[in-house]
Every structure is written in structure tokens, then in C-alpha cells.
Amino acid sequence: MKRIYLDHAATTPVDPEVVEVMIPYLTETFGNPSSIYAEGRAAKKSIEKARQQIATAINADSREIYFTASGSEADNWAIKGIAMKNKAKGKHIITSQIEHHAVLHSCEYLEKQGFEVTYLPVDEVGLVSLEDLKNAIRDDTILVSIMFANNEIGTIEPIKEIGKIVKEKGIVFHTDAVQALGNIPVDVKDLNVDLLSLSAHKIYGPKGIGVLYIKKGLPIDNLIHGGAQERKKRAGTENTAEIMAFGKAAELASEHLEENMTHMKTLRDQLIEGVLGKIPLARLNGHPEKRLPGNANFCFAYIEGESILLSLDVIGIAGSSGSACTSGSLDPSHVLLAIGLPAGVAHGSLRLTIGKSTTAEDIDYVVNNLVEIIQRLRDMSPIDADHPIDAAVFDKVDHHHH
Amino acid sequence: MEYTDVVMENFTCPKNVGEIEDANGVGQVGSPACGDIMKIFLKINDDDIIENASFKTFGCGAAVASSSMATEMIIGKSIEEAGKLKNSDVVDALGGLPDVKIHCSVLAAEAIQAAIQDYKNKKA
Image (cartoon, rainbow over all chains, first blue to last red):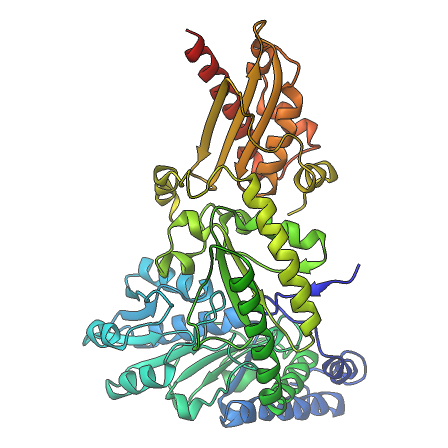
């Protein structure tokens, strides 16, 4: 059976061109980049080429690019590294309620270490308010971390405007741009950011390699201690093959950004129009315009997300959901709750994220099958307009929040 | 997370879906934990034998499969026997459930007990 993969926000297949670039560094140019002999020198030289490719992709200097083992590590480093470096100055951090768990759980960890964190709310489409941000800034605020684009609902935050406000106050600004790269333009100079996290596997590169952009001269504590790699800021023998792959993937992402954006946007709009037009009681989550070109996130009344995913999987379609039942935890998505959806509705969410190989036929197939799946599950559900959801059942979900 | 073939069969082609028009025992239970709601309909005859059973479920694949299997297991049984159905019986019949989904089978057993209780209350 043909598979239709619509979970590109989770991860992407590695581009064959990227694989080609990567392989020789696993076999021939395997030397430790810290070694002084030819094999080591060759690896070292190659890494600097990849560093430059990534710098070019985000309009940075190559000396501002630091390789990490993941986007999550980059987030952890940015937040903990700035907190530790500046704790004598202040212990207040501002972030949002809809960040990735790598940011949220780093902040929660710091709260246990005596830091104070303000989690800015978002409106019904997932936007952070600039007024809320201004009001939250205190004399002891040392860091603001707001994601560029949300991984679940696709909403793009006003990073440039946030960056301007934060810069005026002399506070460090970090943005998690893991979902942004390859989907929308990312320019660190234009955005006024001091720190920016990236990940290769969202842009047709391999898993296990990330980047933290650190603006030149910004003091930050190390997270991984050890050898002198990455200009003494991030220890660990360089993952040469994956660094090379990330460089190539970033180069391709920049080169084809415009055409990829147009392609994804066209199909996304086809998907959204199809679903909202053909399925009653469906709603689009996230901002109608300020959203990632490949992201569509829906809620379907009266049914549950995991049963939608399973039904799709059986006919060859891969998607994701913010339902608690798909995460192994007991709570529905914190992002869907933050945009004000009741837990019972958040359970019925479906996220489909388009990639460069998705076709218009794929979207037609998905929409047509989704119509039937939603109807079948609704026929099976004890809840409908005449038998509304028992609010009391879901209110108790609160007890499980950690 | 992996479901067994039996769970998938009972999810994709569930048995006993829908309402029984002349049901004389109806039970609805909800699990706040995972946001599942299960409603069981029973048609019980004068000899206290379950002639027919059906369900409507809001929930994940395991919840639907548990509903399908549990209703299938009690049709033709006396309400005394059906009331003794344990969630582990449902899990065994499904060839196992992932740990995080065990509560779905609990819900099925509870919904059946609630429907039987409803029948007894109406009769009394």
C-alpha cells in the first residue's frame, strides 16, 4: 500500500543529496577533527564548510554557529546557559505557554533552582501579546525565550517585534526556530535575536544534530563540559558526518525556500478548504494567515484524536494528534489548552504537516477518506449536539496536570 | 505503541456499534484520565438473560476495541455472569493492551455494571 506521510513537523526523510554528502565522512574522512594528522585536518576543514553553509542560511557569521546533538540540546543550552551566567544580575525568565517541552521543562527545572519564570499566555490563534510581554519585563529579567513558529498549530510569532522590545531593555532573547527553518525566512540580524535553536531532521537532514546560534560576544555558560571542541563552548567529538549533512540540508533549504513555501502553502490551503468545506463541525486551530506553510491543525467535534490517527494509518496516511491518548501522558496538548480549547475538544485534534514530496492527489485522497472516517467515528460516539459532552468528566483532567 | 491484531480488528470493524431502541438497561461511564466516554445498551429478557448488547464510545482505539469485545462477551449471558466480567477478561480476549490503555478495559467492565444496575433500578 502507498503511504502518504503527512507528519513533516515531527520529522522528515533525509534528502538523497544529503545522504550522499554524509556517507564519505562515515567511511573515508573518519578522522577525529581534533587530530593533527591529515585525516583529522580534512574532517576539521569540512566541518568549517558546513558551519558556513548554516551561517549563510540564517544570515549569521560562521563563528556564531555551534553544533549540538539536537534542537532540544540547543534549547537547554540557551536557557540554562544564560540563566547560570546571569544569575547574579537577576533570576527572572519570560517564555510562553506554548513552547516546546525542551524550553518549558528547562524553565521548570530552573524554577526548582530558585529562578522565577513568567509563562505568557497566547490568544485564541496562538499569538503572544506584545503588551503582555512589556508588562512582564522586570528589572531582574535576564532572558526572554519565545518560539519562532509553533510545532503543533503552526502559528508564527512576531519575533522581530519581540526582539526589538527585548533588545531595548538589554535582555537576552532566545528563539526556538526548529520549525521555522526551511519553512519561512530565518534571518538572525533582521530578527534581533541573541540565540536561536535549529535542528537538521526537520529540514530533510538526519536526526541527532542541532545548532545553537550564539550572537558574537554574548556571554553564556557551557552545558556540556569536556574537551575544547566548538571554540571551547560545547565539548564532545564532532559528529562530522551529520554536521556535513546538516550543512547540505540547510543549503538546500535556503536555495529552494521560495518554491518549497509556495508548494506547501498551495497544498495546505487545498487541505484546509477541503476539510472545512466537506466536514461539518471541523475547526482550524492556529492563525489563519500567520502560520507555517505546511501546517494544518484541526479539531473535530465529538470524536477523539487517536481513533482518527489509527483510522488514517490503516489506509496508509501518517498524521499526528494533540490527544492525550497518543502521547502516553494523560493530558491533551498544552498548546491546544493554551489557545482556550476545552480538554474534551482538544482530544479530537488532528495535525497534518505537508512536505516537499506531498502531491495534490495525496491531499484529495486524504480529504475524501477523512470525510468518511470522521462520519464513522461520530456515528460511534455517544456525544453529539443532542447529547453534549459532560463537562464534569473533563474538568477532572486538571487533577493530572504536573 | 503497538496494538494487537485483535485490537485492530475490533477497532476497524467493531461489533455491536450503536443504540438498541428498546434497551432496558443503559450505562454510561467516563474516564477523566484519558477523556473516554463509554455508553452500553442492554436488552435483557424476563429470565435476566442479555439478549443483545451494544455500545457508543468516544475514545481511542483501545476504548473502541474494548467496547466491541466486552459487548460480544456478554451477549447470551445472564446478568449475574455478565456483572462478573473483569477488565482482565477483556484484556485477555483482546490479546493484551498497552499498559497506558488498561483503563479502557476497566471502563468497559464498569459500563456494563452500570447498565445492569440501571436495569435492576428500573425493575425494582
